[in-house]
Length: 246
Image 1 (cartoon, helix red, strand yellow):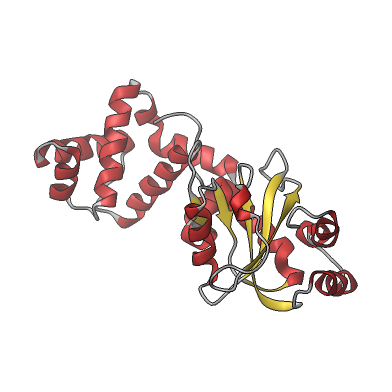
Image 2 (cartoon, rainbow, N blue to C red):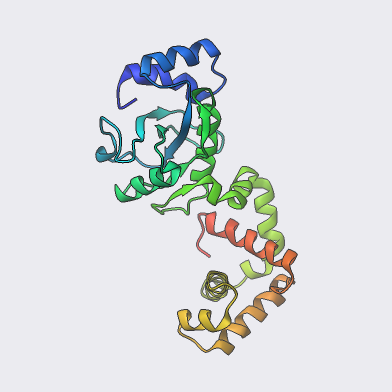
């Protein structure tokens, strides 16, 4: 990695998954890496910035190996991939570094304990990438997006969920639909506070109440019932991840 053919030859089979113990040992020796350690994998949806490909460790001691890997399930093309031997700050610092460098969109895997597990970590990082909004530059960690990750892992169920929960909402004209979706998103971001949502939206609190009540009627789900609220939040995630605007 680090753009070297030799690195790619050693880490490529690991990222593909199912590497034999002998191959893991060979890769560890060739790269100067411990077989066991705190590793994460990063998958980017755009070319890696030149500034991210640097020799030597980061300020927190993380070491990066960049290369290209074949797309996994749900990905149509090869992706820029990094294997990261993490420093004390862990994957949160790795994600922050990529944001600082303007990389993205990108997904960061959970921490795994050995080189033998980077293939599984690569698949999880790819799933995290799929939870990024179309056209965004966000860098997300899988552990922060688990519900959305479940949805993108089963697209046929996601499509069904969207149709079942938001079907009547999707028949509205785009401007009207966007207004209700924006109100719901803002209300959720404000912790269910109508007053704070109204202040952020620049309207009266009764306007927010009326929009939310209308959304409840259209979806036949109540925001005050936890299980039905889960349906609405998950459907909102599916809508956010679709290529079509709300």
